[in-house]
Image (cartoon, rainbow, N blue to C red; front, side, top):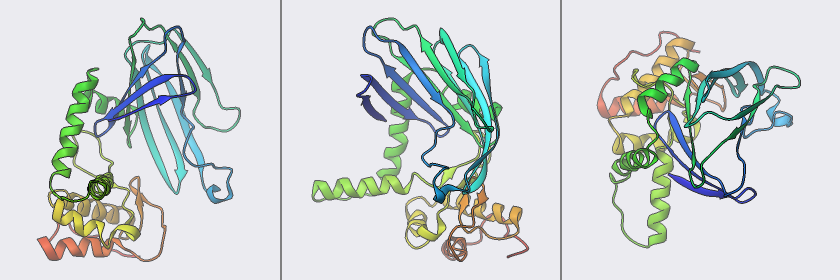
Length: 285
């Protein structure tokens, strides 16, 4: 759960999440227009920068599946080529929709949406993602966040995080304890669950060059039930590409850094816990 206030507009924002869905609550000041700017092309990088010359759009489409649900799919390269399906659903349809198409190229459209809200009632918005397509994003939405009970989803997320974080108990200086559990939380933010809800787990975003020394050996201690799926995901990608992963991102490999640091991750699990559930790729490069 996260809460902030957009100082420029005076809008209070709360956010919580499931595995594939983010739920937002926007509280607008009295007498203001309840407006949402859906900036689909936005990202944390800047393609015009020389360091991001490899970033480019390949395809993008979006539309309203119903009066309150915006869906779409896009493909772009950011270190690796990725396909993203999304579904953005509001708890009420907008009263005004303005679509701003890209001036050039094939980047997604932007949308400016106005809503008619009763005084004191927040606007709720759900955003579901999928590495498959928009239909899969809608299925993830239905499976994990079909209703609008923000408090219930927040409690469920808190319970899941507490189950993981409570596997280690430390005592001491409150500042040190806070720092420790913050680091532990960040340890479990990745790898990312790439597969859709209800399907076999497939993970990606393995920063192997950074994590093979400490993070992955720690997973075998704190979350041994997840590590077989991590290893299977690495091996599955290896079978698809013909080489063991170097730096997996969104189910592909961005070939970042030198050497193949997925090898010690796989071997570490093999030596501690026995053979993984699936066989390694038959070819290497």
